[in-house]
Amino acid sequence: MTEQKDVRAGRLLVATPELRDPNFVDTVVLLIEVNDDGALGVVLNRPSPVPVAEVLHPWATSVAVPDVLFQGGPVSKDAAIAVALLVDSDDPPLGFRPVVGRLGLLDLDTPVELVDGTLSRLRIFAGYAGWGAAQLQGEVDEGSWYVVDSEPYDSFLDDVSSMWSAVLRRQPGELAFHATRPPDPELN
Image (tube, rainbow, N blue to C red):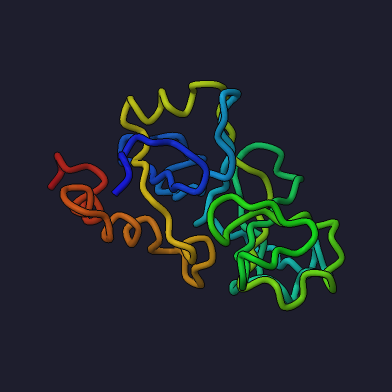
């Protein structure tokens, strides 16, 4: 098991009940880049009502169900970020940048025909979540985020409505109990 405050690419941020920012309440964020300048991730459990076919038609048949754009975060909402899972990590297509294992980012300027058969899953996010240098670690230290390991298919669940509690339930020890915690335990 990895240290709970070890913030690095490929791990998940799970919003704690103390996190009240409406952009992140009950969210699960996949960290896709972490370095000395800051961190970048995408919110995995906020589907939009906009079908991928309306915005990025060539990718419409390649995305995982539900085939909509996901709201990746409050920054640059007009930018698209594609998270992909390779069929075979030894055969990445042109335009693929690994994050961890078979999971990575796909350049959407890559012709669709060049990636056919190489991707197991694909999801497209409008916008992203970003943190400046040391900002995310400060939020983790103050108790706004649980930092947990991801599993390859976390980024591509068909039904994301229960993702927050599902990710917490599979954690070891006391952290799993938070999955059933009421929003305000004092009212219980």
